[in-house]
View 1: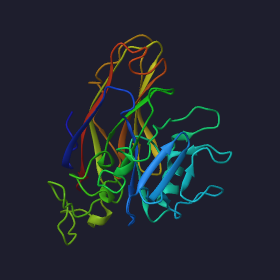
View 2: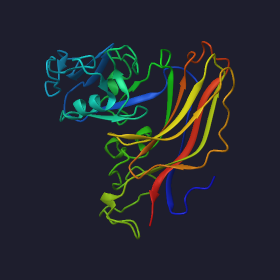
View 3: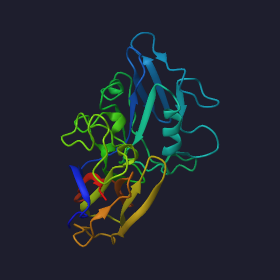
View 4: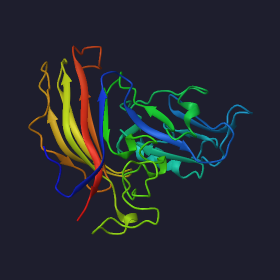
Length: 296
């Protein structure tokens, strides 16, 4: 379906999930001046090193009440921890920045009842651990081979790389900066506004979803949900349920979905009966769309 008439596109984008443990949950970037910064995660605990190679120096600016400095424990305290709370704890440090990608801020990364969004471990000196101070940052992936068997694709700058913009500019809200890395700049180096638009600093990215293909043969029912999400709050836009032991196909009858300014679009498939490659005979989640702005 056609994009809105006032939508000015800067980048077409798509994502395909065909295997477990490939869904991006969040990204963590180091913005300090340490020699070998690394992010390490195992089970419930994050460790933030400013220099891992020389003395395994933990960052004392990372703080959580009742926890050793440099550590964050997702299972600490009686309350369940959400992705939004985790991101806020990381972003409270001057040296680290966290961006949610396929996780909504309301998603639990730990629940005491045992139902949680599992995150894949990252070992010290592993490929992801040492990327903390690169443009890509350290990506934490969903462990989608365990319940609740959820798979997320994201349309938004949060899911793009340094070819689009620097990581600080890859957040949907308040995100239109001079785009030195992008093929289409929305403002010049002096910050001139878009024609007919408000000041460029007040313009937010808009995500447009044009296509969803969710294929799954499973033992019980699955669900497709589309959320519009900022880094702090999300809303359900579309929900479709699949019947047991059937294949959910391409949603050609779904309209083009447009996020509110400042939101990314998260397309989520939940498989109740098992994960990809277990009870699944055929499965994938594919989405495509675009990122741009709405021009008055």
